[in-house]
Image (cartoon, rainbow, N blue to C red; front, side):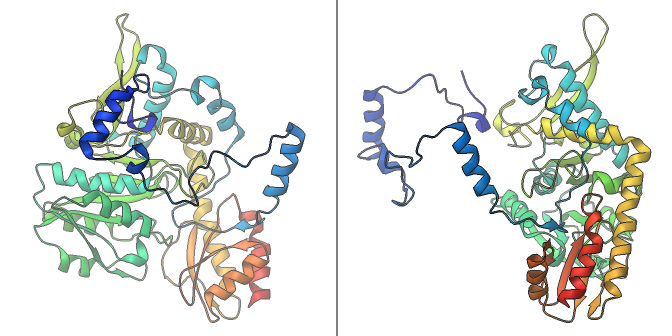
Length: 450
């Protein structure tokens, strides 16, 4: 018996403990005095045998938790930069919280998980429609792991011979995303380098100067982490293809409903966040988009749900491609991602289907309109320039302030609002249908603080 890595161990069985003699033999082989010597646990966090939690009744416990939760700041968040909140219809909770979905693990046994497999198939189909690319999966943790997996895939496909991965400079790529990418390529021949941006979008001429046949992949985002819309994606894709490199485009499910489909601008891979639908902004837990061309099918990481027929010629669903390492020989695996993201994908699919095509487009249009309107209102205040980039924006924008940005952000927080302070005089604001009700109060607080 074995268990998955994310669920209780690396290949070992919790039901077959070692005997005292076996444990002693192993400790002797490595020269350890005891099992405790294998771990370096600081005294201040080491378990001393007492949890320090006094037993209490339900009423007392609920009262104490209420006091603890009351200490949280009650802020209206205008935060973005990759983590977005949209209103989630109640149908998402009502369906996804059903026990057959909530308690389901990986859908290894198709004969008893047809409903979940169909939902995942519909989610993949949604990504195919939005990206124009024929292959999509539902196994990425988030946008960061999707980007890193795209870079590793670029190293595997036969049409690519380079080892350099080009990404936007530090101001336009979240440090966490860059950190995951660096971790993924560590120990390989691949290296990660940056190219400059120009007024919120790719400096195509500067990118061309950095291109050579040793480039494996070029990554660009639209919208960017600052909310700007990339205006020359076709030229970026052409540059990548001229040097036999892959063009990887980052986006999200809401923006993709409004922007030109990535396949039409030459994207070979699309990555990004899908949890903009179906989930509140969780600032950590997510769901990554990964869609690509059919020619790369055998190099796709994770798993693919496919439609087939059963013995009675009825339509049936199953996991048709499973290239992660616990399913095949380790040296042939394309990914070591193990945790099941299916439930989050289910919520995204339910939310998208509840909106429908026209509703999804209307939501995306609101993200453009509300950002433009809020930027105009802030720009009208003395001491604020918004937005600083002369571009179309989606959800969010960066404003320049005459006064120090950290001080303004701190004063806004004292007034009940959370925004990003990017530097000495730059503040980023994100507005969606989830916080648009607070826009008037935010502008008033801005004016008071200034």
